[in-house]
Amino acid sequence: MQLRDSLRNLVESETLKPGTRIPSTRQLAVDIGVSRSVVVEAYDQLTAEGYLTSRRGSGTCVAEHTGAKTGASALAPLAEEPAPDARWDLRTGTSNTIDFPRAEWLRCMTAVINEAGHQELGYAPLAGVPHARHVLTGYLGRVRGVRNRPEDLMITSGFAQGLALVCRVLLDRGHTTLAVEDPGHPGEREFIATSGLRPIGIPVDADGLDVERLEASAARAVLVTPANQFPTGVRLSRERRAQLVAWARKVGGCILEDDFDSGLLDTADRPPALQSLAPDRVVYAGSASKTLAPALRLGWLVGPSDFMASVEHVRAGWDIGCSGLEQLAFARFIDTGAFDRHQRRLRTEFRRRRRTVRAQLDTQLPGAWLLSGPGGLQAYIRLPPHIDEQSLVRAARHRSVLLRGGRHYAASTAASPPALVISYATANCTALSRSLGEVGVAYREQSERREEPDISRRTT
View 1 (cartoon, rainbow, N blue to C red):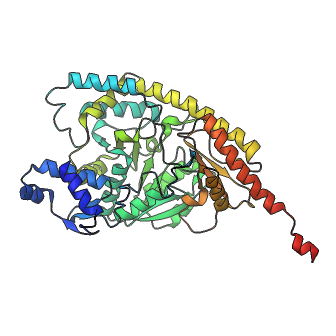
View 2: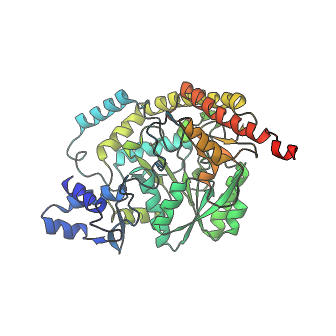
View 3: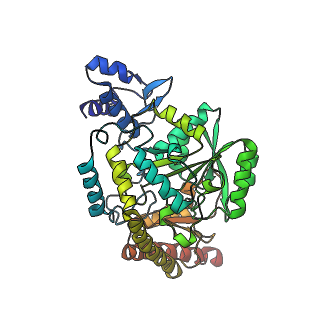
C-alpha cells in the first residue's frame, strides 16, 4: 500500500510525467529491498486504475492519459458531468449494488475461509482455482449453452482485464483493427484504441450487427453483444448469427462475445450464447459486475484451447492471478443456488422498472417509442425527428435529471435519429416515474416551442 500510494502521488503531482518508463518489478524490488510480489501487486493495482500501462517487451510506463483526477478506467462509468446536486442519475454504467445479497455472500465467504487450507490460502493458479473453473464451466453450460472445458476457461479481474488480454493476443497475431458495434460503449472504443488496435464501427440495425458491412471492412476480429446489444437492446437475429459465424470461418477471424447482462434477461426469451454455434471461433466473456457488484472484479474468458494458451502466456507477464478466496466464494454461491435466486429477484424487479419506463413514455414523451428488447438494464428511446437530443439532455439536467442521448454512444460522426438512453439499474419505480416526469416537462416545452407560430413573419 505504501508503494502504491507513493507511486500514485508521484503520477498525480506530475513528478512522473505521462510516458515515463519506470523500473521493472524485479529491479524496483531490488532497489527498495522488498519482495518482487509486493511490487507486482502495486503495479497491477495502478495499471487497473489507469495510472500505468504495461506491454511485453516495452516495460511499464506512466499512462499517457492517466485521468489522475479520477483514477478511472475508460470502461468505468463516465463522470465527465459532475452534478452533486442532481437528484436522479439515469446514465448507463451503473449496477444495482443496493440489492447485493450481503448475507448470502457472507455465508459463502465465511464457509470458504473456515475450510481453507494451505493450498487455498496460497497463490491461486494464473487461470483460476480449478474448482471455481469447474463450477463456472458447468454453470455457463447450463444457463448459456457455452461449450467448453475447465481447461479453456480463465477467471479474470472483470471484463476489462479480459478485453485487454484479448486485444494483446490479437496484436501478437497480426491484427491491427477490432470491429465494434455502432452505437456501442464509448469507453470500450477508447480502451481498444489505447491497447494498440484501431476500433472500426459497424452499424447496428433492428437485427443487430450489420454483418455485410463487417464483411466489407478490413477487420478480422469483432466485439459484439449479441444477446442484448448495448445500448439499443436489439438482439442479433438468427440469420445474422449464422452469417457472423460464416464470416469468421471464411476470414479465419475471431469473435469476442460480451455477454454482459444475460443473467438479467428473461430465461424464456434468452437465446443461447453465440459461442455455442462456433466454439472454435468465439471467445466468450462475462462477469459478475452487472448481476452482483463491480467491486468483486470477477470475470471470465472462454475460448479455443490455442487462443486461451496465448491469453495465459500474456497474462503471465501482467499479474499473478485473482483472489482465490473470492473465486471459491463465487463457486459456492453458484453451487448453493444463491446466484440463480439472486438473478431471479433482479429480473423480477427490473421487469417492473421497465414497465414503468414504458408507461411513462405514453404519458410524458408522446411520439417517442422504445426500441430495445424486453430485458437488460437500460431502455433505448427513439425520439421524434423534431426533438433536439442535446437540448433535451441539457433541459433534463436543469431539472435535476442526468441522462445521455443516443449520439453519446455513436462511433461515427454521421447524423443519427435523436434518442435517449435511460438506465434503470439504480432507479426504482418511484424514482423513474418522478424523473421521467421531469424529462416530460422539458420534452413538452421543446415540442411547444416548435409549434409556436412565427409572429414576426405573420405580421410582416
